[in-house]
Image 1 (tube, rainbow, N blue to C red):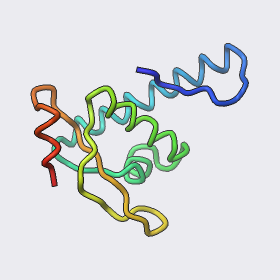
Image 2 (image 1 turned 90 degrees about the horizontal axis):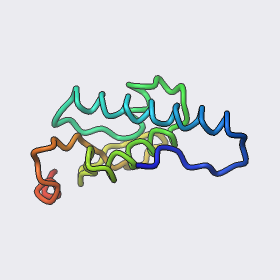
Image 3 (image 1 turned 30 degrees about the vertical axis):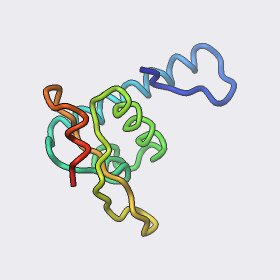
Image 4 (image 1 turned 120 degrees about the horizontal axis):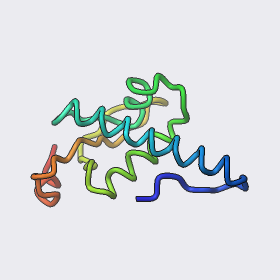
Length: 107
């Protein structure tokens, strides 16, 4: 799984630091979801509850998308209102023994 997407020029040291930070963010997000099985969260909620808005919400979205692609989270059909009054998709933890295709029928 690619943890970090290099979009600007940076030296090796900075790139290495950014990759580690992104990996750590993903682990933090995954651990939060594991502690709340069956609960649904938006990126804005994770941004607020887990990171206390100390990082860009785009980093949270990247983490959640990467974890979804890796099979740890599943995007549900349930929405919640997020910042700016817009509907936001929710994600939940996908336990290893739960088939992904059955989770499609969530919410």
